[in-house]
Image (cartoon, rainbow, N blue to C red):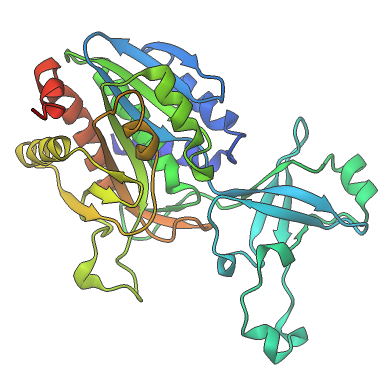
Length: 358
């Protein structure tokens, strides 16, 4: 599975999918799963592959990544942009990006930065806001950028970063592990489950626009009408310098993260207990997390219909929401294995028990 997983992660992370422009990742999802179920989409562009019969189990990852959008073009051909999703501007200056003209050829560029020779002391010590940044693609005028480069206001812009296998075996570095790692796991788990005899309707799903407030999950839930939702995510690791290791709950190499709570969602306690029991039985390495910040598509799924038991499984990733993140492929395998085992464990009686409150 290692080679197949790495090839899929490479293909997905090298793809570009700004929120609202997820077509490259959606095409990979469809290509990987078209032989494993019925494909469909909703009105916002989330994609589904449905197979089997029984309780409706949704296995979902979001397809989009944090990105930017062209807001304005200066007379001398520089691009002003807005953020799509949460960026810390410290990570942006002098980073390479790809401008994706709608219907045109992708254009490489760089976010401008002043050489230190030109920085007064007051400017050296402050964080430059995104509103004061520009992208340089080598154009000398607005007309050249629009007419020769094909770039226009509204075009998406994505980070440029190549998938890399690091020196230590198993460690991978790339952009967009939030959430191509969840997308890859959704695809691989669905492929395995399609060949297994489990008592459920499986709905594998790639949602859109998670980074802009779980918009895709809101409409995806309306279409899928799940009885249970399992959200697969690339979650922020907290095992690096500057963080308290004694309280770390997202340690790279320590297994799949089972999230109990974050500010946007309290996971169904019975479903969490079931996931832990399954992980223990199958000897799948896991770690538990109660998050004080952040959120996922779980927010929308659990509030859909009359309420849906929901859980988030994650692969800890260092430095997410930047141009480069790091994961351990063993954590990825643990998430795939737990997803498969949890779907196999669920049946009508188990699903009914998740919402038996009286």
